[in-house]
Image (cartoon, rainbow, N blue to C red):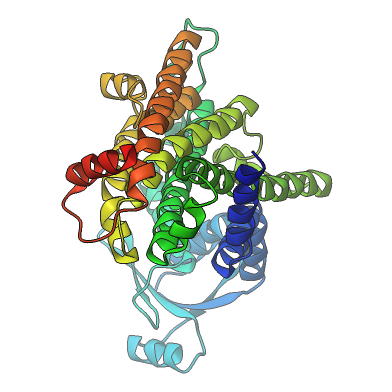
Length: 419
């Protein structure tokens, strides 16, 4: 048993001290901090943008039209200053190019309706352009209402949404806002499960193939059984993943506490479901990450022991990645309909269950027996796969030479394992 934990510790420290792991962890933590404080960054830049006033030249023959647009613009944007000028379009364009004005607006009437032509240095859409367009639109609507004898209050009453309440008979059913937040949260966490399982599963295959290609495996086998090596490596990399999760969780929790203490607005995080993520969702994330990792890591170790060169690892673990891609694609479609037959039945299929059952638990109320059945099937599959994989691993680590296909290599490894 001491040899088992020695290999676990060696596997953990070996990867934890690599530059790639440290850089990946730091980048992930920085991304988490950025997401947790995204509204603060946006408000910072918005405050800087709001403090900058821009001057727009307005050429028009109608003083009334200029005044109406100016008053309407005050309701939309206060940082835009309109300056009434009497000049030609060529002069306006020259004034923009030399930096006198940020833009120029030509106001006129097209029949009975106001119209406008806006000049700017680049043909891009920005807040200034949008605000001016909205102001002219307001003037047009006000004129149209006046012609038919309606007021702005009448228009608001007409445009008032119809009263339409949806009452869910299931008391635990989510509101539309809660459903949107849950969907955003689950979508983010699905990415975490998908990428981490692929990353750590491939890490196992690379670990086995590296030792095998360097002939270190032949030395290790003399002192530690191949099966002990296989499970020790799987546990070591699992601890590596949990350690990374713990670091990210601590940073996220600390960031949330800091935001609460500082009174920062959490509107954007609430929209993403990250302000107060449900505890049960986070627990299911941990559960299905571990089960998904154990399932795919066992597969990766079994397939990784069949290759003799590092260049063959990606080809060997290709089927694993395809299974995860299929599960993720189904999950993306299932975000809008988590109770579809494809998602429900797929959540009981072990290779798909870590992603699809997590999707269901995060979005809808899943009966406990369904979760238990899915987890039970997944655990049973992991045990069967581990027993079978151990037999393949026992013979596969001593196989060298060209590959003959996965099935033929597995049969060959089983024969060698019996010798």
